[in-house]
Image 1 (cartoon, helix red, strand yellow):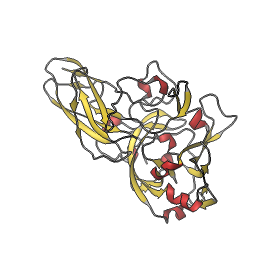
Image 2 (cartoon, rainbow, N blue to C red):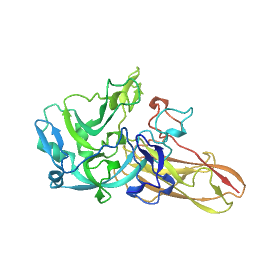
Image 3 (cartoon, one colour):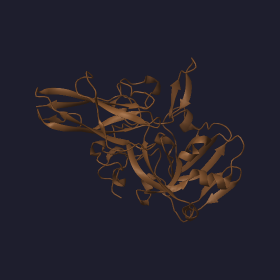
Image 4 (cartoon, rainbow, N blue to C red):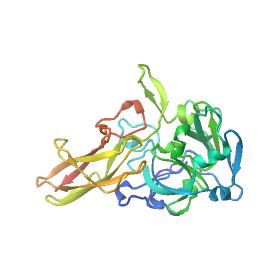
Length: 349
């Protein structure tokens, strides 16, 4: 598959960004779906590949055996926890994603719960941990003493939100997207959507691996003292796709301001758009129905003012619990969780 239209953010390991400005459908074509890698893409042979699942007992599956189980197709939006990192000031380390480390696909596979039924759960099971075939040495310090496999997990009670997918948009997974099998987790940041799965393990205590403690974590002060906690669900976020920053518009024209909104929490109630420095906010039209863990496209018609100059467009989301997308960056999240309102400055001539 050609990824020629994706934006190269890193070549080693391979990290490619989707052109968010090209958003025009609920489902992202596979060739436009962003690619996130922590280590080099491993070479996998479907004929010899096996998935080991360790719960009450250890069970091993071939790809053919998984395919013979009851399959489901789920639409799920995946977003890298560092999406939008390039807008932070001062500049921070990490892959310099702009707006496009987020995409939506139709994934086909077997529910994790069906696999866990075969392996059984120990009393007091707490977390399900996914291990991929990709290995290497992490960049962030403190580092482990040697190469590790990329590993992450989800609480047992959320196992129903996990699909073990072998297909994407009706076609087998590509190497870059996790062939032959990957985890897809509805509503969570994509660091839990482990690719190139080789092992699943059920633990009786919270997983303390590198990518859940040292990396992909944030400082929470809920109890009065800073506590390092793992990132989890995607927060409420609306983002403008068109027009793009710096675009020149003609005075008096009718312009469609369009974008998408997503969250891993309460359903989105509405998206509002402002074109007058937050003096007024107008409700956008929602183009897609609510589905947990899937973005919804929206649009709003703007009559471009007659006065030339720069104008700032902003969108913000409100969910059914009354939570409003924040106007400012929350510094607790460091280089992750960039979900505050991002202005788009356009020029009118």
